[in-house]
Length: 162
Image (cartoon, rainbow, N blue to C red; front, side, top):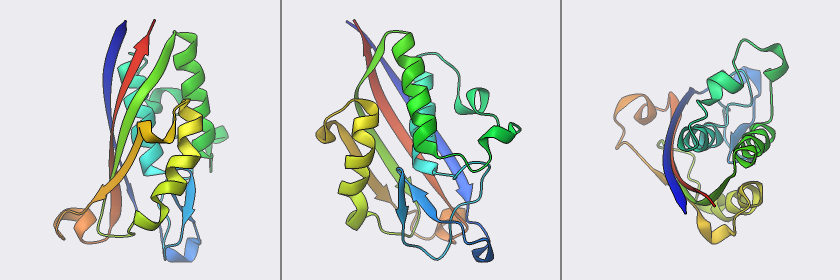
């Protein structure tokens, strides 16, 4: 069996509250006073996950596949973009074995939303929920995430062919 590991990282600043953007994390609208700024829905966790998947398969990154200069991607649902990434992996004979996604920021707390996130994204990956881990950490109030300026996310995936 051919196995590969990929890692992804993404960052988005918080949007101006006047914009009224929802905070999208792992395909779920999370109650929060601000959303994240970006060309698409700025789902930082799904963006890190997609980069990990594409990297593991040697297929580049989300900026190549979904550039922020493409008007078609304006406001795009990242869950739909993830479906496209999964189709690209399938075209090359890859399937996801498991993944671990970590949100980096002081708030929001994702504990109350963790199971919904797993239930929403696991089917998109073709995984049982126990093969998708979702967690969060703070930076102890250090850096841009500690100051509440935005959020970051990391993802690690294992994919297999054969």
